[in-house]
Length: 617
Image (tube, rainbow, N blue to C red):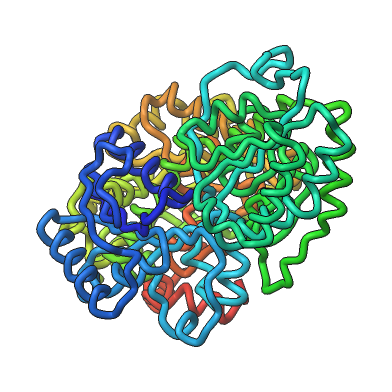
């Protein structure tokens, strides 16, 4: 892909570090990347263009927009990624009338005024860096929830092995050091000033071996009360007060620190390096981060972001008490917590998820309407004596195919869709009226009846198979009701014929359980093993997963994503557009007695909205 990042970079904030890291990750994967910002000296080998994005004067904003539009058209940019409200404004103006999508990462709470809600300048997809920020955008900014994806800022952690006896986890010191790491202007500066006034004097008096390091930029903008308190601390405690200011060696300081006070990226890097953290941000104090408190602390970006407007008051006595409890016997960050942090914020994982957002934005722009995804199971010769109406006879199915042909619907697979999304196939060739035909379980009549009919019409579909090739009939149905008719499942040779015919094979677990009824670890195993087994035996890439019974919750969806699937296919739940949630794609049940009228309805662009209105889901 050809990616343009637009950002405010008058100083090297966390949002700048995030953009640079993304640019480098995608550039190293073979994508072509530009950064357009206030600086052309950022630490990246991507092409840099200097434009004063932080200058918000109206005339300059127009010139900034014009420069972006010129670059987009000249370099045939595929997606623009903005990293601040100022960047989103000028990018939004620049892309008006073009078919180039805009993605915005929102790093903090947005000012709540009329124009914020009236003018949605954030583009086609929005990345919120934590759950509190997503809640704020939906509830207070009134942003469409379907366009928001929660993806944290990524961090490139070191490669050292995480073991309980790894000395890098915690290094005891004969003396102890607290490091406050963060900017000294704005809200962070106010927090630093309060610590200098109300917390650090008491700790320095009570712990004679304690030293204090102040690390971060904009120290000259520390509030006056903070400057006065700092001067007093320097007078009282001399060289125990280390005023470091901005440094490129944060990692080195972390290695020499006993306890970190900070938020956002600082907290993430510290925990990943094994340094204990008191999470104090612009919004709140989240306390000492432990395995138990990690999820709640991460939701606020370690104290930086509140979900709703609040007074942002901090109980500094509570922070002082936590520090007093910790310092006499400092405890290391556990290996389990480090693993949690590294899994959640891993830079490569984040870069892959952001790339998927780019693809989603491109596809939403190229094909903004609803793409019907039809769900079939059995294609028997004659009607079945079953209470489960999950079959369409061979003769009726041929009528379906004839209808699709007449209406100029073009069957594609999810694998095809992803090739358009990632640029392997040109969006100019994307069908005007795409349709995706899916078939669950792999019954023998799919081989005898379905495959020949689809080949007759020149169609391919998606076949969802179990990873356990020894399952040869619908045993899950008979386990519940022994009176149900037995339906045989294809053998390996028959399944391989579908691969040879160009069909997409998708995973459908190992044994067809209701995933939400299993322990999460067991559900994750069912999901992951099905992908592994199918790929190994059928020698084909598995990119999509169909939830048995459409049984789904957020934990199961996350397990599907973590297993490496690009798409999770549901039944009668999901977004209005495929790209609203790739892990919960809406499918349409097909029944034995579909008519021309019902086929028209179920393949119409308005059907998903109609279904939600009628069924409430």
